[in-house]
Length: 88
Image (cartoon, rainbow, N blue to C red; front, side, top):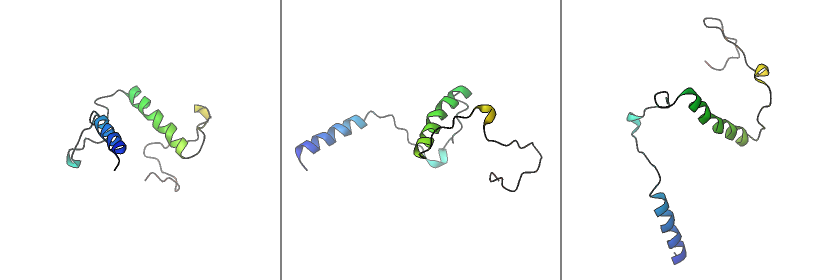
């Protein structure tokens, strides 16, 4: 290995030393519930960049419909679900 690549490797190693890292065992996993440490508005702000990235990775443009025209269905509690409902 050349001295230049060794020097660059050492610089990268030193830069990584300051990264914030936490180790947790799977048994101690607190899960994805952030409700104790964030409010709903903060969680929505966290979600937006993920949604934008998902659409970008899918190669599709962000939808431009209004909320009133959002494609969705309402399921009332206790009511029957249609056969094509894949959330079961």
